[in-house]
Image 1 (cartoon, rainbow, N blue to C red):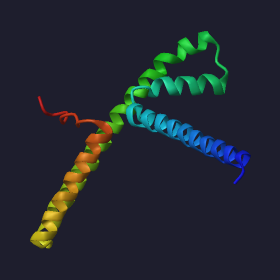
Image 2 (cartoon, helix red, strand yellow):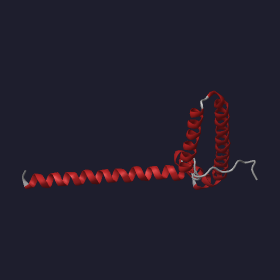
Image 3 (tube, rainbow, N blue to C red):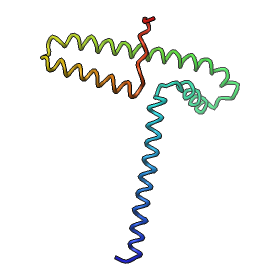
Image 4 (cartoon, rainbow, N blue to C red):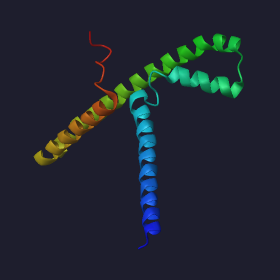
Length: 136
């Protein structure tokens, strides 16, 4: 193998390595943004505001006028999401309780382990669940 070919191969490997690193950084940053801000996180009103501003080409005065409307909508959507999430959790819990008499002890244990895995995964993605609204 000639010296020139060795250098070309070395440069090629370095370029591939750097491209992989850049891709990893991009994907990692995107994932972190999704994990920490969430699709419906605290920045929802800001994302909606920016989207509407760009799409409708709003003036600064119009933006000031629609800001309270967008903030109110974001709060209402967050409340709907919380209520919906609670209803989903309650429905799943009721279904699991109804299934228990039809399962073997091993299957009951596996169902409980499935629930625990789900809780851990949810906590990892979203943090601890807030207490139910009717709890003081």
